[in-house]
Picture 1 (spheres, rainbow, N blue to C red):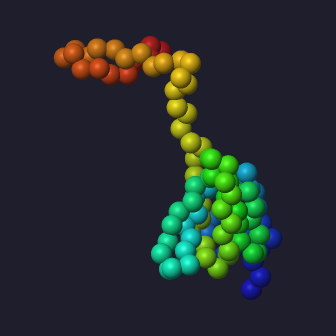
Picture 2 (cartoon, one colour; picture 1 turned 90 degrees about the vertical axis):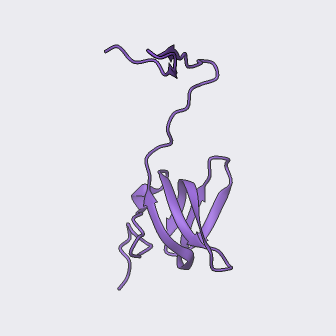
Amino acid sequence: MTPAPDRPLRGVMVLLGTADVGSRVVVRHRLPDGRATDVLGDLARLDADGLAVRRPDGTVVEVAASDVVAARPVPPAPQRPSPDRPVHWERGPRGAERPPTSSS
């Protein structure tokens, strides 16, 4: 059976297709010593030979199709407060600090 063109890697836990290129993904893959590890980043390439994931630091991890254990899209990374815009904390009823509540 040939993999569908939009899903070149087939496996029980491989939930990626060509439409996911550019999206944030997590890929579990086997290392040469048999252990498994995860790589998280943007899917840069996906084809029948394997895939490439660009980490947030810009490095690209190439993974052969035979080494992929599981792969799936994940939500975008949470936004962190900008150093230019500090978070101001409020004092709670017992003096404990807590993030400000939004008044909607």
